[in-house]
Image 1 (tube, rainbow over the protein chains, first blue to last red):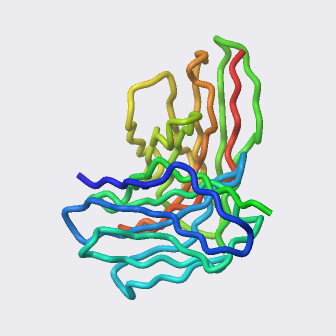
Image 2 (spheres, rainbow over the protein chains, first blue to last red):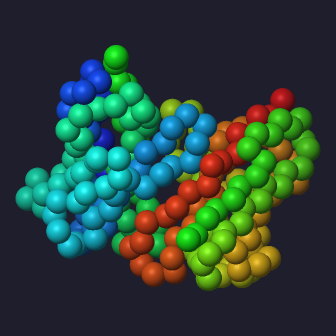
Length: 113
Length: 113
């Protein structure tokens, strides 16, 4: 079965410093992977997706993620954090049937001024 | 472009009252539609999934039901709400092709008194 582990439940960074949100996945096939962001009392917004094309995926708002098959990882990064990046981030893998998703537990990102 | 509308944004209901939450999608045809519940500290739980009009799959047994009377309309209902039905309800759609991302509405915060 597919699963996702987000290695940190909370991450705190200072504004202007790099962001790293870690995600490991488990899948018996070549997965589709996604990162979503959720601001308080809002729905989830798609940041980026990996679907077996380039291993370095660029998303919105300066975020990017690198698919590393050997490490079964899909970490999310951003060179310079902005206050507006403070939110909860979810790493997500597609299920084998292709129509449903498996969500990680989420990482809450705090950005300090 | 595609948009998803979900209403109401917030709802306060007494125990034992009925429920109807509505979700509509614009700008696409024959989408897959999903209802999720997000409880504090428990991540996203898939409640219902639909691939077409009148076709509903339930992921977990519960006090809720779903219907899809039109191609781009998805309704979440209950005849008698329980305290445990409180939570943040999210509707989502995806293209009817495997391994596509889902796109979420802004959610409904449901409080049961």
